[in-house]
Image 1 (cartoon, rainbow, N blue to C red):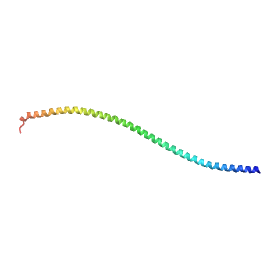
Image 2: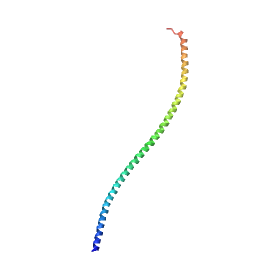
Image 3: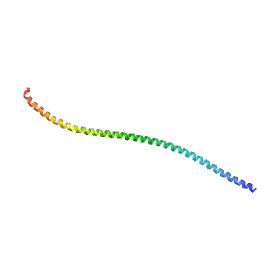
Length: 119
């Protein structure tokens, strides 16, 4: 009889342990599912961030290239402006000297032709 009581006591302890383990198993299964869901969500978010990062990087490369082109164009235009200004200054000096000569010549011709004109 002691043997039967002893077996029943062991069986009762095993049943309790089984019950606890079964409850823990349910909790752990739910935790695993939750973690898998969170993991998938984080993977999707990571994929979106990587795509966004690549897009921004490409845009930055494109803008950097365009900036270099514009910088070269501005430098070229500045050089052309300097050349144009230096030519303009030279031509202004030449035009100014020609203008002085021309005005002087016109007055001289007017003075010569004045007696010929009859009013």
